[in-house]
Image (cartoon, rainbow, N blue to C red; front, side):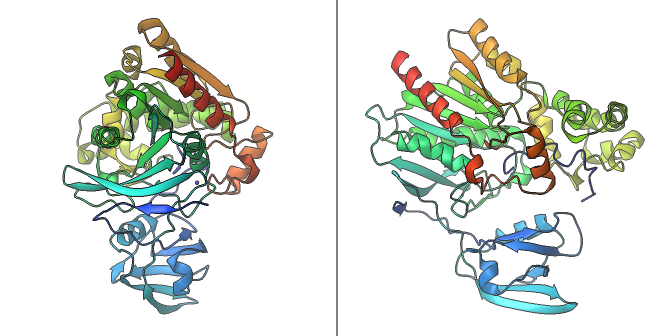
Amino acid sequence: MRKMNMNVKYAICLLAGLVSVSVQAKTVLERTLFLGVSPVTAEEGEGVEVQSMHPAGTGVVLGLESGDVIKAVNGESVADFSSLVNVLGKITEGQKLVVKVERDNTEVALTGKAQSRPKEAGEGYQVEYGEFDWQDNHIRTITYHPASPRKDKAAVMFIQGYTCGSIDYGMAPEITITQLLATYAQAGFTVFKMEKPGVGDSKGPLECSQIDFDTENAAFIAGLKHFASYDYVNQDNLFVFGHSLGVLHAGVIAEKGLVKGVMGYGGVLKSWYEYLQDIYAIQSVRYFGTSESQAKANVKTVQPFLDAWLNSDKSWESLMAQDDVKQAVTSNLLPIQGELVFQRHYSFFRSLNRYDFKALWSNSQSHALLLHGTYDIQAIDGAWAGHIAELINSNTDKTAQAEMFPRTEHALMRYDELADLQQAMREGENRAGSPGDKYNPDIALRSLAWMKTILQQH
């Protein structure tokens, strides 16, 4: 993977980029290996250098050390972090594990049994690990069952952002998203979330990194219908909370009228083509110190690639053969690895760019609450939230509100000053999985109050 210009490094770093009894549903899915390794870099090379390890990961049991370079796992070579993730996804709990590493210029073989990540648990609700079948895929689901469920069987489905990261957060019990969803469960709402195809414990022919937006959206809608089919859920009192790109999935669901209301935090309204132009033209200047003249030059450089990629039906091979695209690709401004752009298949954002989200929101059949943190660098600014609310209120019989949360960033954490957030990002200390006292509970409390109001009034 080519090194990116530092001004673009954080451009789309959406949330991955987070004491009761856990219960296990009858399932054919096995728990996958949790190695628990953080790499020094995710770039392509000759292995993955270990920076740190999660204390509950298999890496600690094997005896991995910081500075080790992972070369192979169970005989499969490892070139970069992405290939490591792919290899680990094939290994399930209890299987024999052989990890070959380079340590002090010497090859060392570490052996042991694969251990899975810890399961989620929570106070005031039980956690159920289940699954559903969709198009020959077995998809992992995680449900929070409240200790005192609401009589109206109200429920919330969470939809995550654009990455192919797992939403099984047992290894990070304090992650901000879990704190948000726990607030709903503790208030009596049943909460549901699901892995994307091929992610976490999920198995099947589809792999998250190879599917387009249409397929991913169809998977989420299938999961929503699966959730709504349970007798402990009243499908007339069902809500969706979309985070980051999950807001766009929520927009499709709202237009179809599949839920009573949708909530979204950290989204966009513009087309993906327009949004990426803003990443280079506005975000880099406003938040990362790029001069306006350099930003204009960067936009001019990447424009041919963005246009050929997002606004055409050209094959990957043909667009990459264009001279102006070659110049953009070699500029170190774009995170491209094979046919992946921003860690998703090029078809993912191309298909996403075909959607007219202004039209979708203008035809919403669901109530909506749009939420924005004023330090949300990824969303760039909060205009999107107000615009969506206006579209719904002006064109439908549904209601919509936009809410701003001062000094709050994309992963629901609050900082005293924007400079503090920027420094934390530079130093790798902006961690949603271990937020400490930075988690902002107001987002959960405000959205909870909104759902209660919608249930009372509609």
